[in-house]
Each structure stands twice: as C-alpha cells, then as structure tokens.
Image (tube, rainbow, N blue to C red; front, side, top):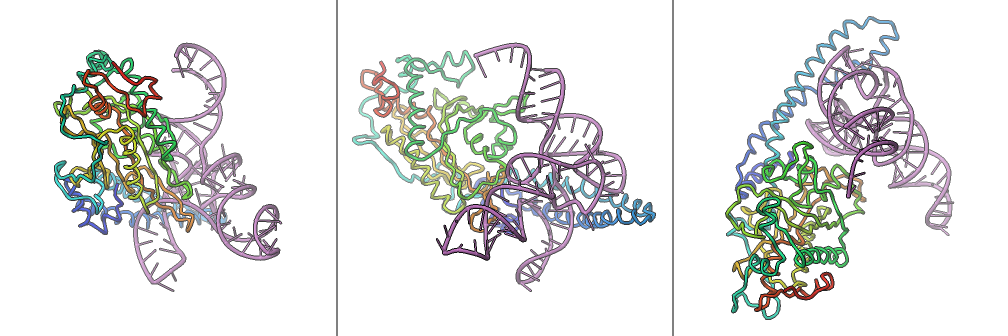
Length: 425
RNA sequence: GGAAAGGUGGCAGAGUGGUUGAAUGCGGUAGUCUCGAAAACUAUUGGCCGUGUAACGCGGCUCGGGGGUUCGAAUCCCCCCCUUUCCGCCA
C-alpha cells in the first residue's frame, strides 16, 4: 500500500511508476475520492465536536435541576446527521481503499525501466571452475534421471493429488531433506538468521499484509470452511509475525529464515515450463525474511542476494543474477533480483530465487512499525525477503550438473555429511 | 465438538451509563541527587485521522471486531473473532 499523502503530493511520480509496472493508473480517481473523504471528515468532526461539547455540560445542567429535554431533542438531530455523514464517509473510504489495494508499489529509481522479462538486466554470472555453458556430453533431464535412479515419482504424485505434486523417494527424499538442512544451517550459523517454523495455513489478514491479496487470490489454495489460505511462500507467515506491532529500533534488523512447503495453484500457467519440477503446485523452499529500518534497506537487499548466492557457490551450481526491470517486477516489490541456475538439459536458466525489497509497502499494509531510540518517533519498517532457495529448481540443476556419464548422481560435497552417502545409483 | 471464564494503554491490573484516553503499579524518557551507577524523588510517557502555525496547537477516532439502545457507552443489548481452563476426540 502506498501512503495516501504521498500519492496526493506526488501524483505524477506515482502515475509514472504505475505505468512502468504495466498497470493502469487510478491515481486521478483516488485523488477525487481523497478530496471527498476529507471534506466529509471535516463536516462530521465539526458535528462530533459540538456533540461532545454539549454532552460534557449535561451532568452539570442535571445537577442544577435544569430542563434538558430541548437539548436532548437537538442532540438527537445532530446524532442523526452524524450517522448519515458517517455512512457516506464509509462508502467513500471503501471505494478509496478498494483502489488503493490495487495500486502497485513503485519501482526504485535504480530499477531499469522495461516492458517484460526480456528487458531484465544480467547483473553478474558465476560458474564453478572449469565449467562451460556448452555441453560436450548430452545429459539426462531431471525427469529421466529421477526416474532411472528411482528417486522421483511424478506419476504417483499425480495419482495421490494431481499433477504438480511430486513424490520424492528413497535417496531422493534424503537428498531433498539434506538440501533443506544445509541451507538452513548456513543461513543460521554463517549469515546470522534466526530460524522460524511457522504455520502453513494463514488467515486473510496475513495474506493481505504481505500483499498476496487481493491481487493473487486466484493463485492461492483456500480452505473455505475456515477462511484460511495455504501459504504460497513462508514470506507470508514470517513477515506477518510482526503485523500490528511497534518494534524497538534496537531490535532491528530482524533476520528470519524458515523452511516450509509452498503451495501455488498456478492458475492459467499450464503449458509453460510445466514439466516435472519446472512448475509444481507444491514445492519446498527456505525463505529469508528481513524487517529493517528504512535507511540502508537496499544494502540489506544486496546482503540478502549474497546470502542466497553463497548456497549456490557452495553447491557449485552455475548461476546468474538478474535485476528485474520495472515491467517484470511483482506487485509489491520496489526492487528485485532473480537468481537463475543453469539447466544443461533444458539449455536455459531457471529461476531458483527471487530477492526483493518491498520498502514500506508491506509494512504499511501489515502495520509493522518501529520506534526510534533517538526521538521516540514511530515509523514504518522496510521488509525484504528472498528464497534461499527453492529446492525444486535447484534439484533440477543438481540432477543435471552432478550426473556422471554412467547416469549416476554424485551428491554435492557440502551435502554429503547430511545425506550420509556420496552417490546415488 | 461440549462446558466455563475472559479479551482495557509497552506490560500488569482497576473501572458497570456522564468532563475516563481511562485509577494504580511496573516499564520507558527527562531532570534532581551522585565522581559515576544504583536507590530515592520530580516531571513526562499510546496509536491513527483531520486541520493548522513562525512555533506551540486545535479537533475527531480508538478499551478484541461489527451492529444496536441512549442526549451520552470501556460500561447495557445482539452478532462475530480470539485466548485460557475443563471434558470429549486425536497425531
């Protein structure tokens, strides 16, 4: 959510930002409603002030034995007027909020302007020693190898639940678990994050707080009976831990990391990168969340990306970092880096992580503030999050980059103490 | 699922219709004292919205959420949500 005052004072800037995000601007309607709202507020508050003033005198009048029936009659009128105006005000505010909920966050000034994913900018690439993007040897893709080694079963997953619900079995399951444990441990021990194991079902307020709602409602699994949503990312429960809180400045920055399964309906995305792990309804993800002061939040973003990169360097998986352009930036993000890992079988880069700074956009919705130690003033925090990392796409890269010519799979060195074995097959 | 109790300011905890944004205690902040600290004492201390000034300010809202009764609601009534305890069920 953008600050209404900010919109009021920077209408052109907001319009431009919204346009750069390929969204339609409702700024003019917002401004008109805002004006109407403030006029109504002024009117009702005058009446309320009058009412309060009179009410304060009633006890004395009664004590003095004066007749109050005339005053009561007048005040009854005033109350009716107030409730009429309040009704109008509520209508206007509902319309206003309905529009505000759909205005995206503005791209940061450092974000390249662009229309689509084609305009994203490669910030840097990293390759393990001796690695080449050109394969001399053909590799089995993750589906073939997973089947051959008996560690992945998409067919049975489809039987149990439907397509896009993978089953890991045997050493595949162990490898997945090792990956999760390794990533958590690195972030906890080397990067200073606190581990969180949050609920997987969250309420509507939480979904609104991190801005999955209203825009992405169709992409969420929803338990109608309890009006609970199954999380699409641990970002939701972890960021919302501090919803409606005023934190102390000395407690910032907060750095959390948590593993959860993630669930996405992926409505409307069938047919595109949909095979195997490339797009699933359920996947595992280790997520980093930061709640920080506004100053330096973009430095925190760089740190977040570095923390995710460390995993890939340790795993020796080739990757590249993209700075998303304005047109590819998600609704709530101010700036975002995608990390893509190399898939030799697909012969392309696969998104394995997304690291974003939301500045105060989520904090405003979720009402996450902090009190300055310097002047005791309260202001909104900045929130960030990034995958560190999603295992499914990572598993594709591991299966493809670590397979031997005989079709075995070497377990990446850093995972071996977690798996207890060095090779599969 | 059944029964009961309860949701008040950063926390604890008063308050059952009228100057109550709310006693009291703790905490926080500032000051006095001190070489310094502690203790003690004094003062101060919520958030949101609107409006406005040179600055201070002024007004409204806010006692889980929503509705109602009333001239007036933290206090009375209705609905919803949540928490705790006991019972049942159960990993």
